[in-house]
Length: 71
View 1 (spheres, rainbow, N blue to C red):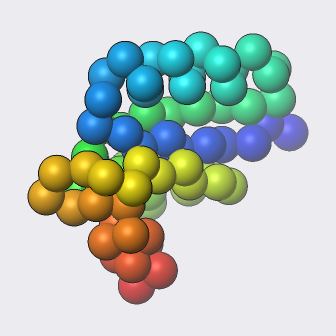
View 2: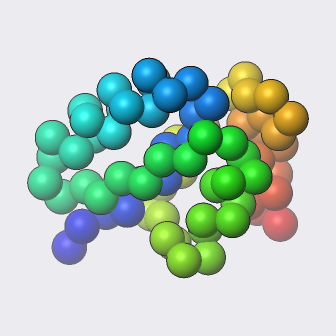
C-alpha cells in the first residue's frame, strides 16, 4: 500500500525539494500544491493520508487551510 501525502507550500523550490525527498521512499505518493485553495480543491480526489502545510502562505496560510480541511 502506498501512502498519499499532500504537500502545500507557496515556494516552488521548497515544493520540488520536498517532493524529491519524500519520493525517495517507494511507499509514498506525493502531490504538491502551491496554495491552500489549491489544496482544498485537490482533497476530494487525492484523499491524502497526510497533509503537510507551510504555515506562512499568502491569502490562505497553513492554519487557515487546516481549519478549512477540518470543516
